[in-house]
Image (cartoon, rainbow, N blue to C red; front, side, top):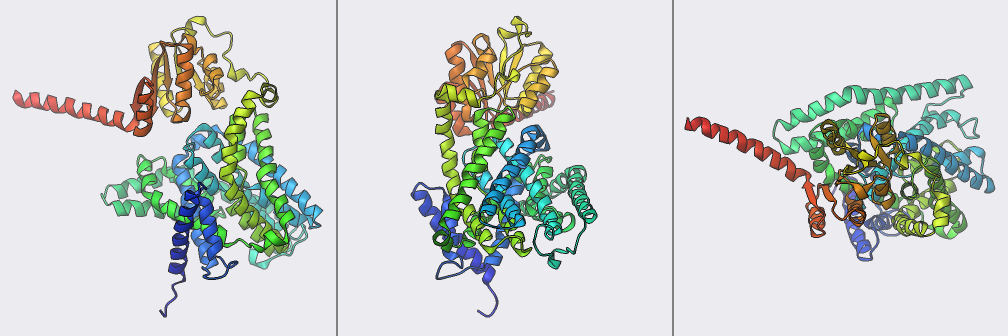
Amino acid sequence: MPHNISLITTIAAALGFGLLFGYIATRLKLPALVGYLAAGIIIGPATPGFVADTALAGQLAEIGVMLMMFGVGLHFSLDDLWAVRRVALPGAVLQIAVATALGMALAHFWGWSMGGGLVFGLALSVASTVVLLRALEERGILDSFNGRIAVGWLVVEDLVTVLVLVLLPALAGSLGGTHSESHGVTAMGEANLWTTLAITLGQVGTFIALMLVVGRKLFPWILWQVARTGSRELFTLCVIAAAVGIAYASTHYFGVSFALGAFFAGMVLRESELAHRAAEESLPLRDAFAVLFFVSVGMLFEPSILVEQPLKLLAVVTIIVVGKSVAAFLLVLLLRYPVKTALMVSASLAQIGEFSFILAALGLSLGLMPAEGQSLVLAGAIISIALNPVVFRITKPLERWLGKNVALAAKFERPADPLAELPTSVPQEHLSGQVVLVGYGRVGRRIAAVLSERGIPFVVAEQNRELVDQLRKEGAHAVAGNAGEPAVLIQAHIARAAMLVIATPDTFHVRAMIETARALNPNIKTVVRTHSDEVAELLRDERAGEIFIGEQELAKGMTEFVLANMSKKGNHHAH
């Protein structure tokens, strides 16, 4: 065939081999993700036989990153980001500092320059958002409070990395590298450096402000206009065009990364009532391109490094999987969050990905880092991504073990958290026959407002400490913690409560909550919300009390309205 078909060949090979090896991996009880990485190694330049186009695969992977981040934005509101700022912002910045210091120490030991060590350390410090999302979605905890902390943490990491990518060329000369004209950098003084920093922050700030002020009104309106045409394909096209178009514009005009641009695109489209449909329509394409992302990562792998530098690679993997995780675990505990949250966040960060490759490539082009550094970063990424599902599995037994070792758990848990206990000033009549409300999200807030209006006493159990603090300032009774743990419900005085209302979308701990409530109060009435018919069926089998399924209740309310109005119309005709 005379014309160039390298794009078709690359997509066909990546998806075909991805399917084959993904299937083999799942049959071997391994995550499909490991199969996709293996497929990339097979069609990559490092192995004999067919070789796909690495440059094209990299661009396809970039689209995968955009669509995945857009999907997260659709589920993640500005309120969610604001709610986790006190743990995500200091946690992410300190964790990057610790991991970078570990990487620099290792590079110094190998005799690299300070600049090379800095780039290497930064590359090891930033986790892959795509890998994290896959892990959270597979476990059904993307919308949980701990899931939101992990996503917020990685958004902060992405923002820090964007800043580093812009400043690195400007600092290359003083760090022992070469000034690269291709990066638009000439000899720079300190004044120029501050100018660059101010311009960068200004650009990122302008982009975020534009998205939040103009984007929040404009894009949901455009989506609504397209939806009114009644064309499904136009609607899907609008969603994908918004994701990719905004991501491209954010990079081209504001110097923000594709991933971050797409994330904000999703976040502003979430303001639309059609956000749920937008997420559904773009899901198949997001999944296909996510596979291309993992295959393209595999294609970059250089297997010879396993033989040539096994000890160096082991040290790199240890920093990524152990060093970063331990640092994150201790930081989350220092910020007064429970062991469960600390374990979840540390497992989320035990890998590196897309930003690490970009940092390593930039470090190499600026003459800061040796070529061996890039190979170590890529190999470390592939091994840590493959190990990540295993790390997640370890968190459960670790949590149980810490729970059994009381003395050890006491060392890890922060001393008497005032928000984890109800104040003694709460009147006793409010703690007898009250409603225990688990979760203070969109549903919980509405229930609490009605209970307040009717003068019905209630106690809120909520994982978000900032929300609990705010509730107490407003005069409401609330305790911080995961209601799946008996201590939290005991603090909410479940033994004397009249009703347990579980208004959280996290159905993972519902059974534990109901078991605790019934053990302490056999006559208690329970009310549960869910969006899944399967979960509802499971809870009905266990006699979990009254169960409300989101879509069913909506349909019921709408049907009642229709019938009431039609009966009025019937009566009118009869007259």
